[in-house]
Amino acid sequence: MERLQQQVEFLLEIDKLKTIFRRTNLLHADRFENDAEHSWHLALGAMVLAEYANEEVDMGKVIPMVLVHDLVEIDAGDTYCYDEEGAKDKVQREKLAADRIFDLLPTEQSRNLRQLWEEFEGGQTPEARFANAVDRFQPVLFNLRTGGRSWEENGITRKQVDGRVAPIALGSTELWQYINRLLDEAVDRGILKEGDK
Image (cartoon, rainbow, N blue to C red; front, side, top):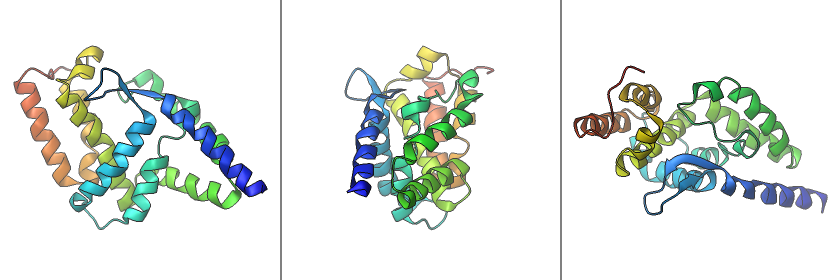
């Protein structure tokens, strides 16, 4: 019963992910996406887009990886991807959060989920590169579909977006080419400013 109780406590704790809001606007509601919605959408996105991975990937690893990748934000909060100040201590905040959250589980499950999270963060395996590619791809699609709303509200430029989407190419050249074409169109339509940032 002790093992089951640990697992139940972990499951109850991660419900908090539903309360962590990102800066990505939903397409069909006037509010921001939460981390749980993002993780769910990302898992489905990875399944649907798997054929575009640069390398053969184990989807049995990618799906759990994307489902756990933002759990640390329960404690660390969501650091907006263009927030240079918030990024300074992000790694430290997230490591402390990983220690606490994953350690709620029995030892081997804690170790397994922590390894998936660390693999995602390290971005060195084919699975991590593809998971990261889809993670960066999805918010850009949402921004494009909402007329660049979040970019405009936060003064984000094409140069900043280019820096954010560049790693997509490591996991999927095709997704990177696709998103770059859409970003070119967004600049042409005035949805995204070129800028110097």
